[in-house]
Length: 184
Image (cartoon, rainbow, N blue to C red; front, top):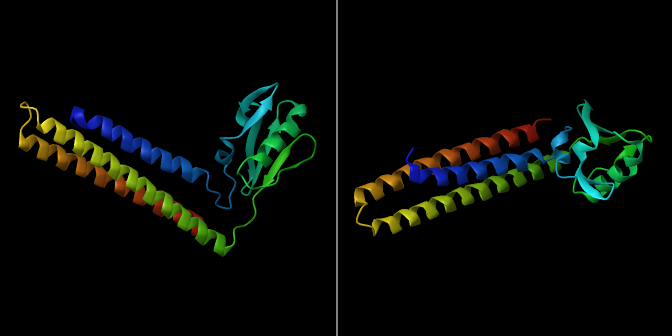
């Protein structure tokens, strides 16, 4: 790959990674500990990621179990989960916090599939914007005497191929996540 294409490839990779990261946060009716990744807990006055103050496990397909390393943290963890966008009310027995995921209704599954499609479209728009930025930067290069029109055409073709490959990857990710959501 041409050195001048690498920054744009990196940006497209970040866009795809961001989309996959967003997909891990979508609740599919199954317990996924990644939905807790953004939750921080007040630990002696410092906001600390949940995974650093407790053991997070998935003992059953639709349950996440959080076992704090200090019993005094149970209330703080529960408060952080309630304040987050997880949308599940935690239960605790004084030592362990449990998040039980309800079975998704057919309507909710369809809504989630639409949301996934929207996120995929937004990612494709981002990739196309990166392509536009690349083409603009190549056009600026064309004013320089060192670069021929053929080279500019070649760059535009290369960036289009790159864009097409990322759009396909996004489509595949959307199809995969939609299938996961719609599978009962």
